[in-house]
Image 1: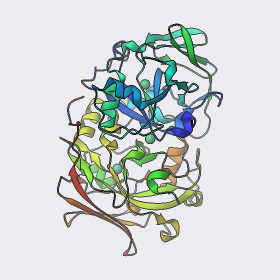
Image 2 (image 1 turned 45 degrees about the horizontal axis):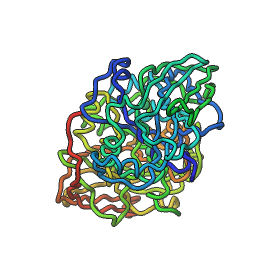
Image 3 (image 1 turned 60 degrees about the vertical axis):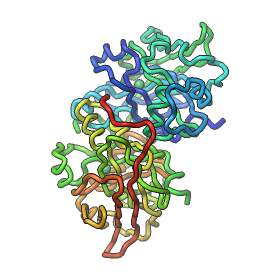
Length: 229
Length: 229
Ligand SMILES: [Mg+2]
Ligand SMILES: [Mg+2]
Ligand SMILES: [Mg+2]
């Protein structure tokens, strides 16, 4: 198994897939799943250093279940629940880091989200979880703590659009390839994290821990600084 | 040299980089470069079949100069003009196909552009152009014809933000890696193309043709049909 970082040709993230998260950000509920891309260069493997906070950026965490795709999928049938599971090679825990003020400007001006979502280190992932460890990806408990304080804690059973539908809607637009990573959306509780803080996230099934992320936040440095586009 | 399709981990596209193109789409002129991602799965190599038009989609062509990155770049200095050329492995001609009605909805609702830009076959590319064939990427003539009618014809000298600045602004957000493809924006004249039509695009330097794309447009078929998000 190649690492998640080296194996991914693309990373596709479902937006607004938990009702209470839509409410907390005052977003409109989508009439169908939508998604966006993060670049593979944003993936931060375990023990690869801190999440880097760009200057002037309000950085938010979003804990999510990730599905690593095991084979090519095109125009997948959303009713084929077993086929969806068969197409998954394994799973990971992931944090979809988001430059919320960059995204807010993009949303207001109708600009793309790629910068807000695509900074280096903006996608911490856990170790790879073999598929057999998760009998049903819709009964997984996700949680995230910042400096020991619980911020997010919900079951993937709360997804508005389940994984077969996600794979169907993505693959009718863009072919899913072996190694691609699909992030399935974040539950409620997203919020800011800043330099000097530590995030811990856990993925459990039946109270058994299958994966964790422990990652600090540090300054990015360099030339980037948030300014108006 | 791996093919452009197999070598790209990411494709980064500069938006609104020619003044007359900004005017024709009634867009605001950006105060700094911005960019978005297309998935590598959208790349359509030469002779790999037609561009596929999804149901209900108003499809636009955007002819662009592509730069294939030759080495890892992070936080690149925009003043380093020679360094930018050194970081480029070669070039290609490309058409950034865009689902304009999908994008218009995304812009209106503050949604990401990834679907509008990311359909399979939405990035026809020419054969690879060795770097030595283009002494200065800012003196390249791009043109595009639909069924023999000239639609776009301009010099890359009209770019608002030149390539060193583009590589700088991208790489201060996301590390550019060997094989990544950077599309540098489209000049004026973008417009619709429909099933049964043929696009031809040319890249010339000093009236000498260095690359061309010839590609038909056919129906995509399958489950996708444009509907409200
Ligand atoms: Mg990508
Ligand atoms: Mg997310
Ligand atoms: Mg374009």
